[in-house]
View 1 (tube, rainbow, N blue to C red):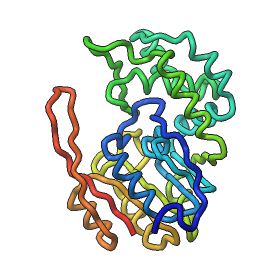
View 2 (spheres, rainbow, N blue to C red):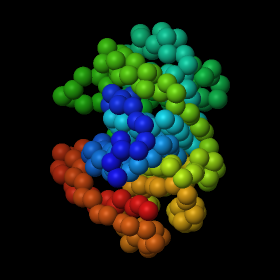
View 3 (cartoon, helix red, strand yellow):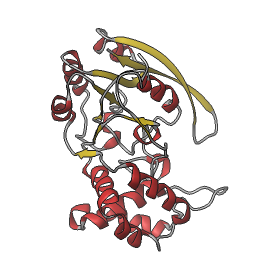
View 4 (cartoon, rainbow, N blue to C red):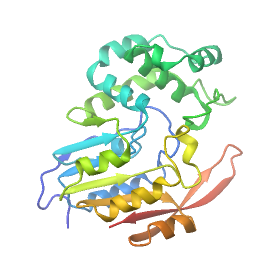
Length: 269
């Protein structure tokens, strides 16, 4: 069924995420978005949005969109960008790439900051850390590229993200609460949990290996449609064996500049 046959969609300008994020799906984005665009839906939902590696690269949107992340820093950044964009830019415009600043911000307890300061801190650390890591971050620097935080390059992306978030509902829930809350006929969920065996990459206790079984049971009773992307492992195939599983090979270039082919799967109903 064509995306635009029966449901009204708006064309939107694709943009890139505001910062790197582990599991950002940049190499799979085109494949995933093509699949999303082939499924008729009037509501789009992401329970693990992260920095929006898929959400912001989409080119069509239905009448309702809901994004969610259990990480409160992610949700706070998006909310600040949507509601206090001018003030946020005032906070960020004089920031520079500095190991000392990275170390200073990394040591601060975000709960002691205002929401605006928290958003600025989170974005700075994500932009300047190595590999888009969320947990156990290290200052990222390369001898053959400029500083990772360049406001002249970041500002246009932030403006695009600010405009794109208009009308989007942003939640800070566990996936167990988010999925049932927005499930209905006509809903499409794109689900991008941590890779199997890499559950702590986004922070200790954010997602447990046993949560894959919980997710599987939720999806079995889903009224809407879903696309789930994960690393290709026997355990993943076993857990989600009641659904269609498609293998997608992706080539990643590591820090050593060697290429590594990684098997991923797209699970769907």
